[in-house]
Length: 155
Image (cartoon, rainbow, N blue to C red):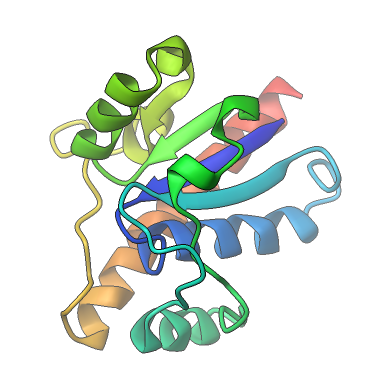
């Protein structure tokens, strides 16, 4: 299965989600080698590095984000993805408009796992302090843990 995370700049939310899921898959014998993970941003400048706060928060999870480089969705391999998981409903709607043939594969992260149906968005931490990044990372981790449970049952 090929999974892509999407946010705006691919330097915070989708970068953290990609790194976190890769880390958890690597530690899970049932999923290891069965899922490919990448990320992109709707307005990303390809080659940008993650924010210092995203790097710091991922370091708290034992994950090195320093080598991550942003990819603009237009320069990505989105057409090959099985599941495309967006940070927000606006990202989802934008992608459906850009790639209507992929509509059935595009979800918000929360929608895909049935988490917090009253608020399907993971708020952008960009420009805020480290605590906002920690809240964002915790929300992403909750979604990823639910994804892993879902995939283990499906595989």
